[in-house]
Length: 66
Image 1 (cartoon, rainbow, N blue to C red):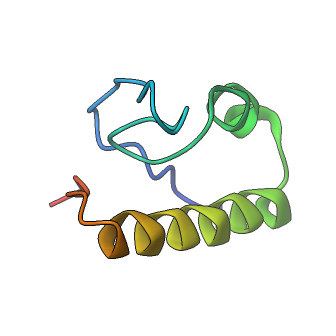
Image 2 (image 1 turned 45 degrees about the vertical axis):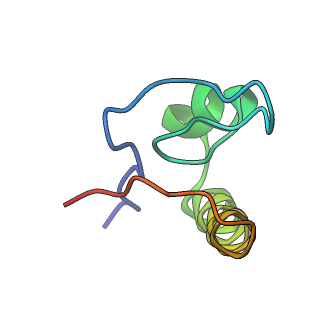
């Protein structure tokens, strides 16, 4: 089974971080998602998890999928 996209349909790039405000991926990660391996997708998801922790610690809200 393929790794599902973390997209939350909140597609705005943060000028402060360079990450999408909805899914916390970079533009490069978003564009390669559909053509990459599940292992790479899991690595991207791990990076997103770290980014969300950093954002939470910095006091920023994180929009996630309901």
